[in-house]
Length: 411
Image (cartoon, rainbow, N blue to C red; front, side, top):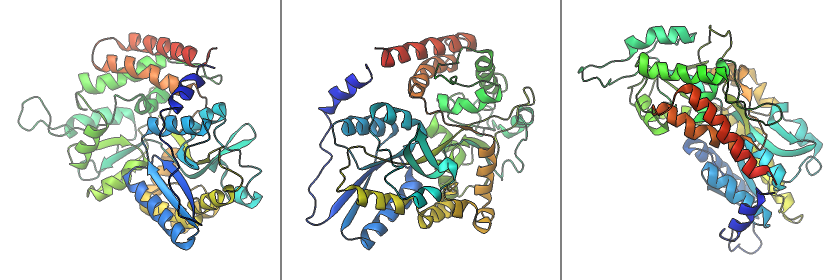
């Protein structure tokens, strides 16, 4: 299979993952992509575990999305890499395809599995490949209560109220404040609008479904916000959107759970709501919701596995998940935590996050999703740069996604 060839070639370039270990101490290494606020919670948990279990040292290492996935797979195929990897559910298809994640269902106590909500355990076939500590990744409408006391319930309301929230104080044609911003150049952030117009990225067989009227309508809606209504920035990547919202220069932003703690830290008085309802289609925009959690490297030895599983048990424990609810507004995966009405109802952000999650759609786990994202990105940015129409952009997305899937998976 072509997918494996570049992985095996790059394995030779991967630095050794093992390092000198203190005698009598087992080191359990974890690679993750947790953002800044999440990272603090993970690092504190790792330190607590190591302090309470001096025979085990837990090391955590952050890597960005592509590096995390690729380096892990390269390493695990060659019997290297970390003992556990933390990431979103869409990686599971790749782990299954490359046989780099250990099937855990027969290696953990049945009571361990029983304590999780169904959406906290990700199976590929009959194999349990990911144990989640949170349900998340879903984009939500976040608004600055000072600038926008009440969020719009519908996209029509958003369009109607947006001009008053877009302020060009000096009349230079470049607003100092916008009604809304988000990372609208990245396909993942287009998904709520695509789904709100009735579309999706792929079918049940993993084939891309991008060249559709629904995709055209979703892209055109974003273009109209920018070019016709002029209520979102002319350019906006992730960092621009974050800066505008944190500085009070955008009344609302669309972003995910990883960002909410940062808004509180920046002193923004914010609330959250569902991404506004689409009255034209009668469909709620549905961002992707994904279990995020730990997978165990298939190369972990039987001798080391008990220590690795004990660390996994702690990092997904009630103690850690309760802290994640309080500090990160995370949706927990343990039954005892999610069903704790006192804890859950005492946190308005968790309640609002759950409300958005109710109308979200689960992250596809088909391994072709990576090629679909890559196929979407270039044409979508061509549209936003004014180089091609929405219709041509949708056609090019489909073409490029199909070509990437064929190049990757066809033998």
